[in-house]
Image 1 (tube, helix red, strand yellow):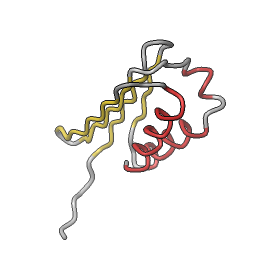
Image 2: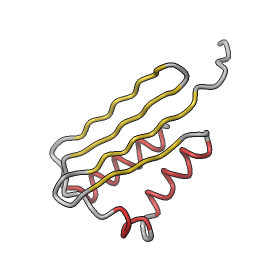
Image 3: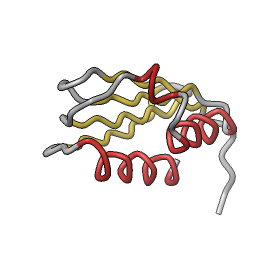
Image 4: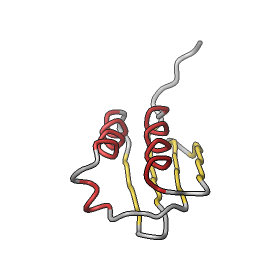
Length: 93
């Protein structure tokens, strides 16, 4: 999850021209929810999906740990990344 957040922030700083970023991490029932949003210039997700290594990597990292990766974006309205990851057994330290 750290690497997903890192990539998202990198993309926002490089491309979005955002003035605000929101990151929310919550646990509810048997899932961890990660929400990342910005108020940047947005983009067409269908066009970017074909060319963005960063987006592909975030999706793959999420799916590797059993999560669901959803991204919504619209030009001039920012970008929203929603991730839901199931909580697995917790070990003791």
